[in-house]
Length: 64
Image (cartoon, rainbow, N blue to C red; front, side, top):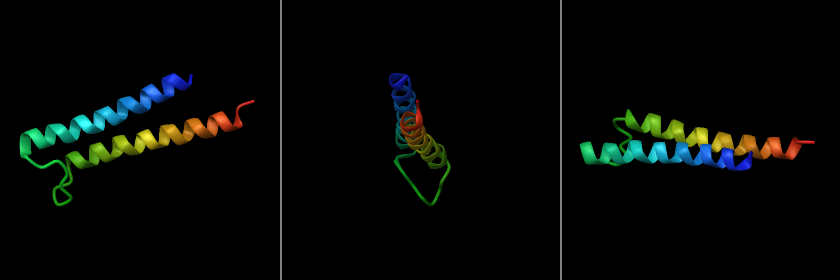
């Protein structure tokens, strides 16, 4: 169960990094706060990763 959780979290980190690298390759800017379009999806992906890891920790803590 724990390996699936970490695998899912790693998947979302990789997705966020792919989004930022794609932006860098196409537009020449890795992260730009003035034009927050790709950054929204990347930050959402990173936030989802943090939520998955926190939820996994809480579920593990309260498991019988």
